Image 1 (cartoon, rainbow, N blue to C red):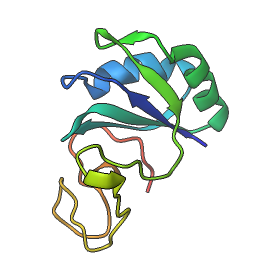
Image 2 (cartoon, rainbow, N blue to C red; image 1 turned 135 degrees about the vertical axis):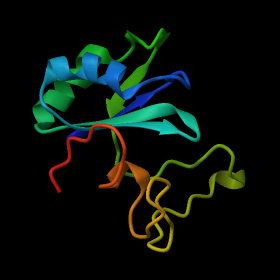
Image 3 (cartoon, rainbow, N blue to C red; image 1 turned 180 degrees about the vertical axis):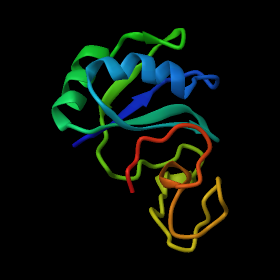
Image 4 (tube, rainbow, N blue to C red; image 1 turned 30 degrees about the horizontal axis):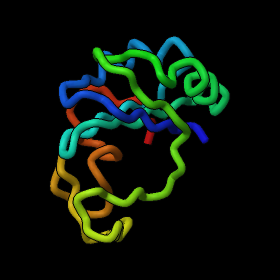
Length: 121
């Protein structure tokens, strides 16, 4: 798995700050920081070995002024704490992207996303 989850981030965490920490482990494909709700991010590497090294090297370290959790992304939708009973509906092709308002993808996969993107789609 090339994608890793970064948790326990402050609400003002920036892509640039995460890039500065994670790029030392290898070439990044994408960095996406959640805004609503804030507190987590996903970092994707070109090579899965770099992702493994980053998890080992950065889990429990201080980033953006706080101690963060870094782990392999399971690829599963985690239950949202604000949804009662842990209900999570997963991907719905009718949902709209927060960036461009188009259907079929979410903001972290948006081609029209502002800022830097490492995706080569």
